[in-house]
Image 1: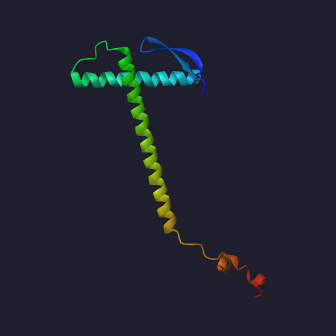
Image 2: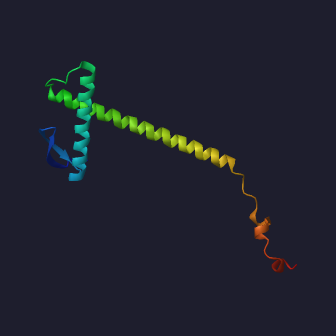
Image 3: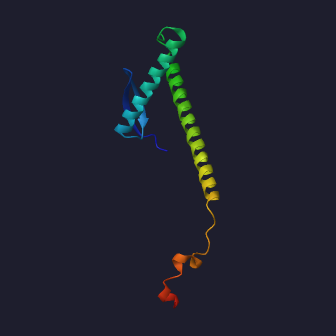
Length: 119
């Protein structure tokens, strides 16, 4: 895995330098998600304590944001896995309800015309 190109991002008015293999659109989208995560964390803090968070240690705040995002990703993966299992179970039940195919050559559609059968 290569470290990628160095890029400078502004996250909530703070500038950080990162190494990224993503393109500008990916970085913009990731920055937007990270900023939304920090805003969600600030709202949760304010709801819990009644005041917005004070100037916290930036490294602690960044770690909390990263853990929050990792938790979201893990939850999404669990939901995706559960939905896949539910879909597989539903398909399996549907397949069990479908009768086995009979020999199609004996059905009326495959017997041919009266002329072909010599009648």
